Image (cartoon, rainbow, N blue to C red; front, side, top):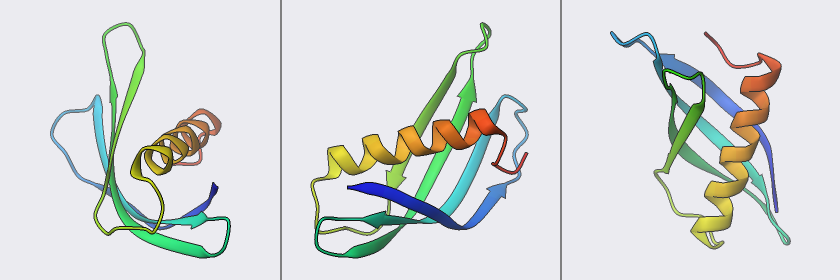
Length: 87
């Protein structure tokens, strides 16, 4: 299982500059199919520069939730490191 892409990625406006809120449609490649789920995630940076990513999936996918969230969190972290997420 892996994350293929984040479609319809939008950043929500916020008042706190070190917390960013996003919504998207996450596309997953599962062993027998490709499925998508609406996702909300937040990237928060602490005072030491460490980033915390919190992910919530809105719809259910026919796959265990914990590996889905872990794969999505890792994918988002990689996208953030490469500077591909909207600022």
